[in-house]
Image (cartoon, helix red, strand yellow):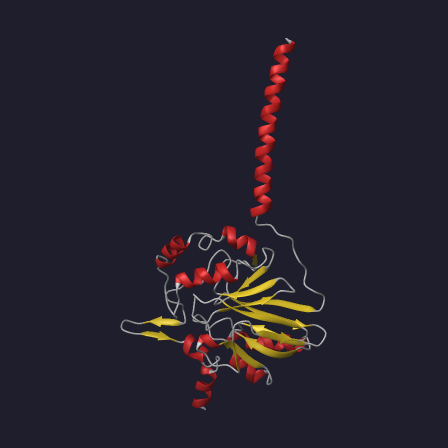
Length: 290
């Protein structure tokens, strides 16, 4: 009987050892490749507000130095320019810059309207976008507001002029349409390229620290933020190989954006021409009728 019990104990110990080893490997892999990361709080002198346009599902971001009151806006929408002006004035901020991540096709930027509502602010967009602005941004430029700044990182592919704005101190990045939450911008017009977009994201966004929070220009499912760690693992497109990604993008069969009206023989583009001139297209058109 003792011999039998000893054999059973030995078998149980071996099984327990294998289970522990396997469980340890699983736990180790989870921590090594997991999606959950430590949350890093903003510094006390950094203002962050995320604003939303329900029509185009566009996010506009207001950032400011709380101490000296200098502020910037990222990706404003023309229909909400008065809202943005009111918020800025209520908070006692001085709007220094209005920056776009790229030349949008699904809405008209509020940049031009804000320049008329809040004289003194200056417009920004990447030089490669082909759009007009007071300041044409180059790679690695710094957008300074108070003691804070964003670094301009080129992330083309959705359009030729897409950039991501990175704030290392706060551990955040504004990815425009290059990287969305569990998705990415389309690549079938405006000089888009699936291969270039894949390279942009993997080399310039996925190489950021895993805990960095990513804020896109749009979300169509009510989500507000993601992280580098989440998207590297969970993004159903960009977590795939390059060939798989290109195949996915080539077979999206997406309709044109609402701002591009397709008639029988023509395609009428409303947003891009306006955004080429900093969103003042509609304003100038109205003035011409007066």
